[in-house]
Figure (tube, rainbow, N blue to C red):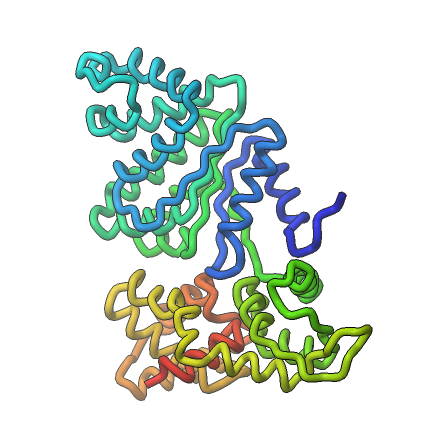
Length: 380
């Protein structure tokens, strides 16, 4: 049976084929478009194809040791695998068994160099009869936090992973995160570490995928059972602009249809959709936008953060966007004289992280909803 459009059948088929060919992947995707959901589905797809999948989330971690602990915790859930990997580790590093830590991968962490420990695990997995896929969610955040403390350690980890990908073909890696790893590596001059790993972008839903998703929400009674007229659909999709599953769901839940019955169901009007937008922008729902509010301040230094806020403050007044020269002039009026190169870097970072989109020479908010939120709550 074919998958619904919004279950990403095309993307999943392509990812499965590339992983099956031994290619490791880096998914670049802004927040709130279903990357973690897709990561779970990829794990299901590859498991069904006969692979062993080890899935971890390293959001909030800031060290190689924390990363290794998450990985070993998942491995230790599989007792037979744990025993085989422990045997390999203890044979390679005699001091582990001599230290009396027992058959515990977690207990051995810190007694061996972290890179040697990780390579030993991957080498043992590579020798297994079953191929292994290691899926790491929020990997970019781990690299960012590590780089803030020790740029050299972050660079060494990335290059070590590159070496492991090249040396052990029966172990594939699927990395993703809520910020672009490409942005992080550029910022800390580590882009070369990404050579050899394929970049897979993930975009928001198309209109047809969004309609498919909304129909599933209706069938599951997550939203009211109503008919979405063409006028209402246009108002929803045009107003949102950026068809994120997260915001589609919350907007649909807030639509109260007031139109006449169509095929035995009440219909929603464009006015009903606008009221849903207004409801979602009420202060009690501000938490739905917390990730956008916090991201810039958490992941950029103070000077860059202030510049990025100023750019968004300028653009939230202009639904159709502005040219770079106009943005530069607005920043200069606030005493922020930036070179063309620096401003381009800021704009591209905001584009990579899902805030902005470039159309021709104009930069604008990707999401009409986020633009309205920024205008309401963030602009001074």
